[in-house]
Length: 352
Image (cartoon, rainbow, N blue to C red; front, top):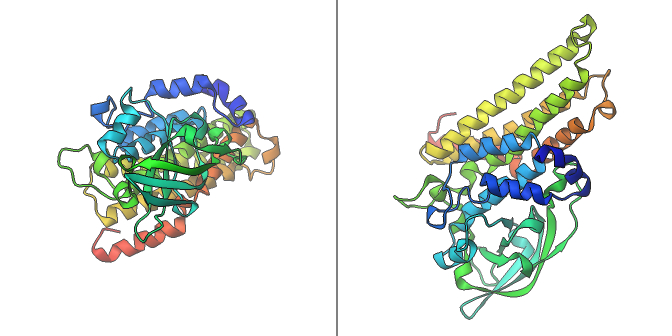
């Protein structure tokens, strides 16, 4: 069903209601929601593979579903009264997020905060019930996270990228709004590891342990879909002698995509069970950034066959190609930044 609706969602830049219902039924939004609210307190590995499978049909739906799950994990760090507001009536609340602190401003007020600002690239905002917005305090101190109802913000239609077109990653604006104290916490409390002997791993792990690798999952599924579409189109005559370069390209691209799956699976397993050290975090960031680049290179290599130029390839391939490249250029998957973090972790005695 998601695959059937994907071309139209891509064209109109918005997910269908049928797709949203399917995402809810599949449990994406509830994946990391604490068990006390009926959620799954799930694993990173489960979400990685579920997202990649969905992305073979629609990368935009997979991107939104993955982020709604991740933002539920973030919201689980909020005080219990805020969690009750989000999930008191059920665990399938979709939560979008604007995580650019410089885009907003927060002033302390009696029993809360006055928050305002503009946040770019808020994926899935049209279909969310709540938002997590990050803003710096006026007075010296860390930036803070604020949970606000979706109805509190205005959405400006700004997302018109080549890939992930149906994610609705638009800008949002919040005029000065009071946010009660219980719906806020310092940004470091959201991102850092948390000590909780009885807590599920997904609720104690730092954000960067699994955040980037989960972002690669839609690209993995989109790359599989692009390879499938390319193979279907070039299959006639593929066994002919003159098409040996095309067969080699198919083999290399397929092997690269399979290798990335193995790399990401190992990273997700570390995120779920390995000791959390600076080296573990840096290694996962490294593997995510390298994976995103390898997926983009693998799919792009298929377009370099002079007998089958990009313009001649079908729409499914082009969507997959654009989706993979859009993920790979996300700032959080910068190979330069990941390499710097990985190199910095090595003197601490971590295994290269």
